[in-house]
Length: 338
Image (cartoon, rainbow, N blue to C red; front, side, top):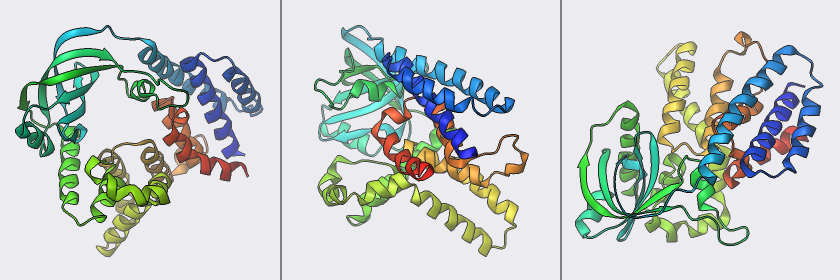
């Protein structure tokens, strides 16, 4: 019965989040249905848990709704200085794009490169940089056709609702913090994997690091049609493979069992940053972490899948509103129900 408690709690939280974000009242029907099923469990601990996570999800969903519906003003001339991590750059010919941060606010930076030197510099960056961009400030355009990809909503889930389009005025390298060092390591690994023969290079970059390179698109066409890479990533199988490899290596070195578990608990969040932090990777990492934790110390019985969905919903209320989140959790939801 534990898995059904987590299932109804997670479903109710997502209906609650969708009601706040989309302002569509038919989500209220699903929310009422989930609440009716959830209140059948009269344990006070589950009631308190439901209230706490509902408050968290409500606050996060309100932030998401404000970011989505708050349209920034159009400025024809703006100069913006942002800090960009090395793995945030996407360079395709004379066009570059990145997500930059300034004073805890994020901007989508779209650049028209002026020289080949700028292109090569961005392609080989391995450290954080501070970039001054001069150009035009615009709101991110929404979907123009029915069922088309909604760029505004996608970037709103990351706290971004504004883009600056222009050219580089000035760029300087910055020192890396502890978290930025992991992003720097991710970039360096990506450049090393790019030197591997194709299609191994593309598979290694996409599966292990979550990196996408426009120049590798022709080699990935067959893999996309077969769906092999996508299913492998969505299932999180590579996370289990890496954890088992780490455990076997530590066991070969005759490490005690508690040390092996500790190494896995430390490795998983580090790999979450190195892997890009996608929804499917977050689910796989959290489920692996929960399976490693000693369950006897928890007051509530933990179901790894249900607890993971609740935690991911608290962090990203729109998890089941995106295709990646739906595909990542859909198969396991079907298994849990049937």
